[in-house]
Image (cartoon, rainbow, N blue to C red; front, side, top):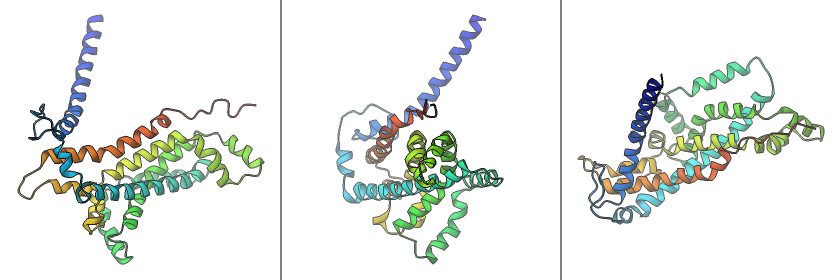
Length: 275
């Protein structure tokens, strides 16, 4: 028995190590190739160290403008998604109705729709209402595409906030909107952090939506402009591509670091409904 247990543990450790290596190799290639003057497809220790790849891409046309466009698009759409998800999840969490479950199942089904299946009618609609090739139109579609799953997540987190806290606020004369803003949302901070990070990351790496809805090169986000590093004849500037990937990943990493404490903080409701 001890020998079998040791064998199973060893097999599990080897499997986990193999998975870890599979995830680590692409990251290692990005980091090493970014400072390699002769970067290629192989993962290898650079013969020399250079920052020339970063110098080549740190220009307004290649990096600064696309990153600013990405921050405007994803930041605006994330804020809109979180606000709308909180307002939509509140009645679903606090008021019981026979329509709640069908509605939740409907919005959950909406998350499974492939984005390519709805882009043709969306494109035609945006052309008709003059939202094509506009940042605000792309922000609206980003928010609409992420809203179903954001509502589902927010509602589940909101269920964890005791309703007795709101009832005490209502007794003091607070409205439903005031209790939502001043009591419920502060207490579900970790949940809002999860929704924020999830929505931002999903939008940040989206290539297809801005590629279809934006036409002007100056409005393209970084997720689309990264395609410029791939030449028409198979020539790829691997070092510059890796350097751009490092910079492109930085905002997502910073966002996670900023909300990491909220993600691990829990709801901290102990004793809130006592006394």
